[in-house]
Image (tube, rainbow, N blue to C red; front, top):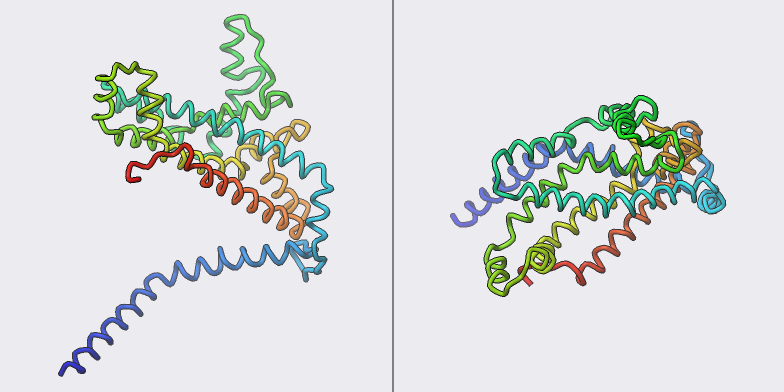
Length: 301
């Protein structure tokens, strides 16, 4: 009898396993076709001369060698790093500041929290078109406000000196998701720590730097990592608003990759760029995790 029961139980488990695989099979097929296959293919294409149609011609490391002699490669990398180095820290500072304001016990906080989060919900294309009007040198909202107080506004997106900064300013408009995460982190700071700090005579700045920031450091690290990954792949806004101009001042790495692959049909060259970008992102994330032990506090440790 025991052997019969075990056999029935095993057959039921096998049947449930088969049903489970069948239920997730659409995802498995999608992953294999739309993720794993392109991933492996791009690695192979990076060693070939390939225009998207026809048979790829194997050329070894020539694409990678040519990249390191390409001035636009270095310029696009510089533009991307410039954006990342300024936009990510600025987003962290402003996000924490707004979260602290929204964490106060005052009337109408739900309304203000909704207002802060709403820009994040606006589609990227729509927000890019909106900001093209806001940053218009002649008729834009910002320059009109500056003109009303006697200040001549810059050319913003039309000026190579201001174009990247314009996109950085625009990026802070969509900080809603980060603010919500920071708010969650603030809510998880134990009130006992603030009470102990009050007993010790700590002022508001001491409590912020010695209680709030250490307890929120895992949340900050999470947002920094997301910010770095997204910034290094910055594409849509630059493509819609400037197309890399003026004078290639907003030619970001992903935009240059897009040009080479879908406009110049250098698929092999673009694949090599994609793999270099993967290495850069992986290296940045690794460094952030490697150094996090020095400044990230985990309450369970």
